Image (cartoon, rainbow, N blue to C red; front, side):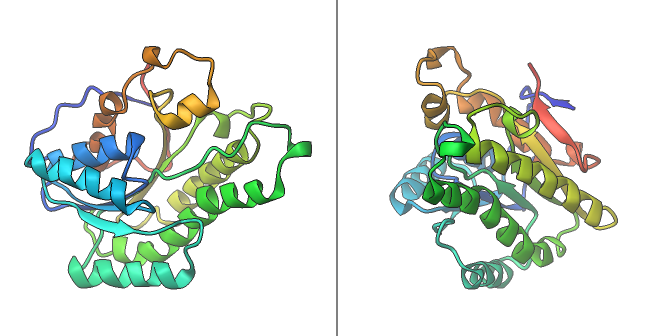
Length: 249
């Protein structure tokens, strides 16, 4: 199913919504954080680099949007205890969570499975799969306290159709698609809706790493795509569940 980025929203579109975004400090995560805050949501910005989190925080506040919350956390080294503390912090401060967007990820390296570095494989799977699993598991009870909650997994075309040499990244996105579908089935009769979303190519560092010979100027800026995220967190997308969504061409 395709989703358009041409979504006009008001400053009250997501008023009073509490939405957690991983990897909120740069690239697409930064763009969606700005638009979610512009739409009135309080964004819990989760990322491992406090400096860049603070820079994005300043941009949001200086623009006059809803003030976000900084939550520094390294997903590679995070333990169940860290996620338990996050759960407690959200419940203590807000009493619920309305949205969870799994945006953080690393690309690893492009090489055959036969030659893939074991340490890099573990790191990529930890950040791209294990961390979203644990984060989701601990936050489902918090999401269940919302009247209309969403979980959104950022995916990729290489997680829906296998492509040689994409290694741990490709495998991780296949895993994310499976996790998204499984959760959608398990939570079908609850107030939580679960989907995956492939934003396609964007002008980001991750894209430049994957395609170094590509002219990145031809790719859309992340901020031209991020209105689609506001749509997916809004009432307009309330019926979507268990979908493999793709940005409209």
